[in-house]
Image (cartoon, rainbow, N blue to C red; front, side, top):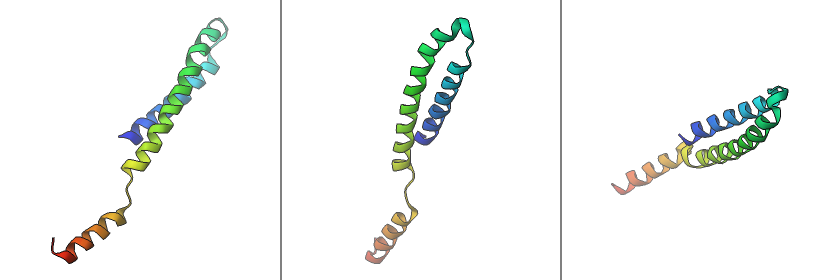
Length: 76
């Protein structure tokens, strides 16, 4: 879930930055003053969630196999 949330935040950050660059003249200053900081916050949060998700949700398969083999030898 952390990986998915991080990916969504990264996509949202990209979209906010793109929209900040595409807003036309009358509203450009107001939109840029809101969308660019929001995109930076979303980028940082998305990156942190992705890293946290990679560290906690993606566990190597060999750890479970070695534990299972160790328990099988002891009769547990």
